[in-house]
Length: 221
Image 1 (cartoon, helix red, strand yellow):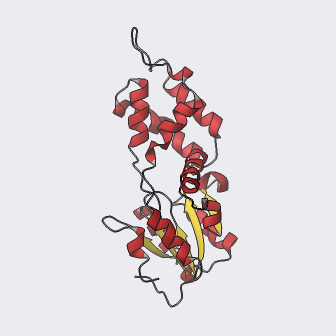
Image 2: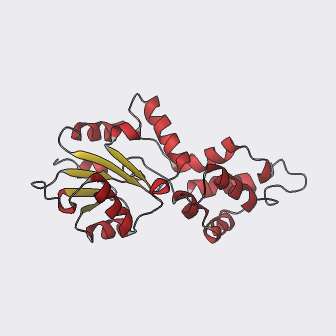
Image 3: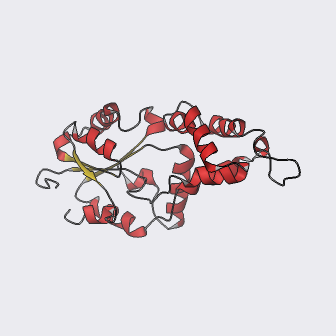
């Protein structure tokens, strides 16, 4: 339960808070492209920690795509198959498969956040990648809405700050950069570990869980 009497700042996660996501979709689509079992692609993904490196800025867009091509190289084609070898995948093919994690964006969530700008300072904190952010902003502008960087006072992307949730350092970074007092700040995230870490710093952390959506958690603000 939020202490609204002291609340001045709202920090939002992006995936499954603002925009619904399907974490299994990229693996499923890369497996289909590479003509491989999903479990094999998932194991390769985890073994090489491509996502972790990309989302903390250790590799850029081009390096991410190169890693994907190399990881699935010589696995994406069989003799007589029409499957295109991974080293021939265009950037757009990889980006499209990677962006299948993003589902339809409910416009009412954006409108509610915009309504809150008059009463609170709004921030975004997301473990994410540049390809995903460009796609989300493209969807937003296509809906006639402002991009994330205009929707919020400040955005904090893991790949830019070189930190990721649930590390306490990333929350301390947001508090410091925003000049925020933890007890005056609410944080909304769908991940229990992220919520626990934020709460450990005194932030009012709200675990967004289905069947409720962020709209439900904001109804009393």
